[in-house]
Amino acid sequence: MSGRKLAVVDGILRRLTDDAPQVIVKLLPEVVTQAQISPRTIIDHSNAGASKTGWEALWKYMARTDIVMDCHCLVDMTGLIVQCLPFHVRADCNFKANTFAISFETQDNGSPSLPYTPWTPEQFEALAQAHAALCDAYDIRIVQPSAWDASGIGHHSLYPEWSSYAGKTCPGAARIAQMPALRARVATLLAPPASVTLETPIPPSPGVMTEDDVMLAIYQPSGNWWPAGYDPAWFVVFSSGAVRRAVTADVKLAQSKGLSTEMVDSPDHYKELLRASGSTYPSI
Image (tube, rainbow, N blue to C red; front, side, top):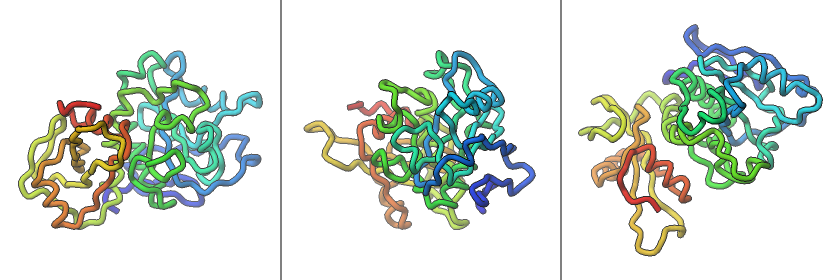
């Protein structure tokens, strides 16, 4: 199971181990009126209220008959997951993606703090465990979605089609910067027992690696959106969540081990990897 602690059974999260993230199933009244969906995308949000809001208050808000907004799961800063709708039932907080997206609302310290408040370690791991269960259950790709209607794991403000509000920054810069590491953690949880290990690990910046760290993915620039004369970087993601610019040895090792190469297919995706790696490579 490669560290898996949650599973999806009949659209509901179930704990596999005693040390799994805590899960409360408290379904909204909309469960009997909303349409069914075939999930292919996970979208992560932040609550973004005026101040820190507990899950009970947010659940009651979504349950009001005058509010047309709901999500599949709430995740508080302790790592507690509250499931509000089965994953095969539509939730209305992803605009045009409501017909295929699974949504996670994560607790924060209030909207003003979003630019510099990352997910807590407990929140991050709860998200990773839940996302891994969903990717396994619904065959969701462990990549940043290449388009607004593509499969993958993304953040709410990634595409304008995911929000009816212009200028949306959800879930905030600090959490958006964690997305590559979150996808890497999901990949680790779903990886088969036989993994590709680095023969000569090179310390990334930032991040801490060990001799047992596992190379999970190589990201290759693609598409025709690069400025003329720009020489984009490749990146490598490790099981610790570390991200750094790839060197030639990384690429050769990945190729020799048959590791899949993912595409960097948009300026935002490239900038996200730059931030995660702490690279001084020129931004576009």
